[in-house]
Image 1: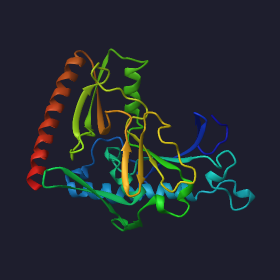
Image 2: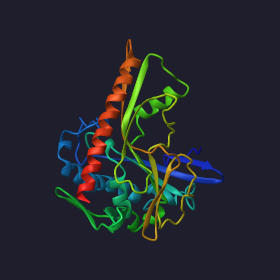
Image 3: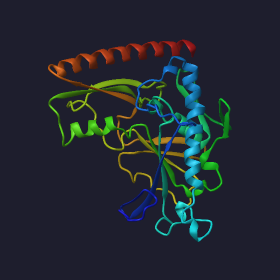
Image 4: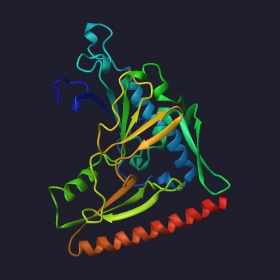
Length: 314
């Protein structure tokens, strides 16, 4: 709804109107050959570097995009200009920034950990008690430093950020996602089989590793995918005009209240990251079944090894 050119979207539901401005986290320089959809980065062999990029480079890239939108001014011909939330059709209502990461090769493979780290300025550390139960400790983070760049953390603590009701993030607002939704919905294709595989949230409160998954899209036992699958709405605890919890039916609501971070998922299937492999030609179904089984067996084997390693460390 809405005919105003900015922000990008104005939506209404159950008597609530929300304005949404979208943006992307981009590389620091001009990289014409950037392949965010690529499943891996040549640097991913270095686990320590993956962790550093997730915890610091990704937040720095997100920070630049979010701060630019927060500081942007419109209608400057009449003076200093107005912020998005000062526009007449936005003022007094929730205002949301939507972001997706396109800052490096394979950047869509990153989970929301770096996003949580920057927005709230926190990190989660795991340990086990004497009974072997998982204990999660929340710690404050002061800054993000990667290469020559360094920024303070905590977007929702910045002056002016109280005007941003929430940040909507996903790593799956992609062509493969909407292809999968089309195949399982109004546009089935008997000439193609799509294998989706990756890792997902384990809802066991004692779990410390994601679960592997692999399935053929559209199969009866495959989980249902909605537009909000894989998306988080990170609510600003300081928001002047909070976005209602549960307004987006299939999006996970994420909150940080009184020092406690929590997710409110809307479905059991919560993918962290995934890859889709489309198979065409004669016998595509049989090929897809073999691929699914191979990937799932390898994923389970890797999962078990990591579990044993974790136990030995604990």
